[in-house]
Image (cartoon, rainbow, N blue to C red; front, side):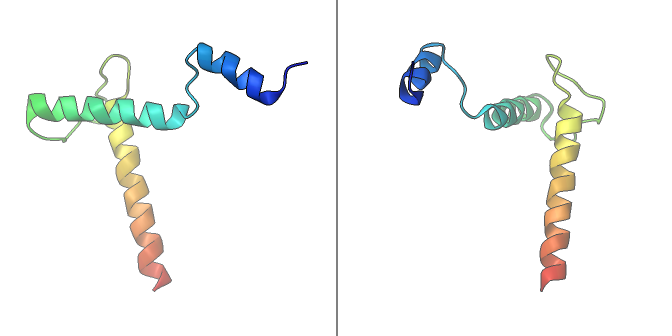
Amino acid sequence: MFNNKERFKYLEKLNIDWTPKETEWMEKYYLLKEYKSVYGNIDVPYEYEINGVPLGVFLANQRALKRKKNKYYNNAA
């Protein structure tokens, strides 16, 4: 039987992404940077997609998370 260390080595040989959520977020971030370099802003329409990635939805979700975080901290004081 393989132990966990050996299993991890096998997975690493396949270039496993141990942090897929962070990788996905960073990919969207880089697409947003690309958008800004083309359009000069990050006023991404909600429906906007690039390479099948819903960039407008991503940005709207990030803004909503920020508002939620700010609301939480403002109410905690």
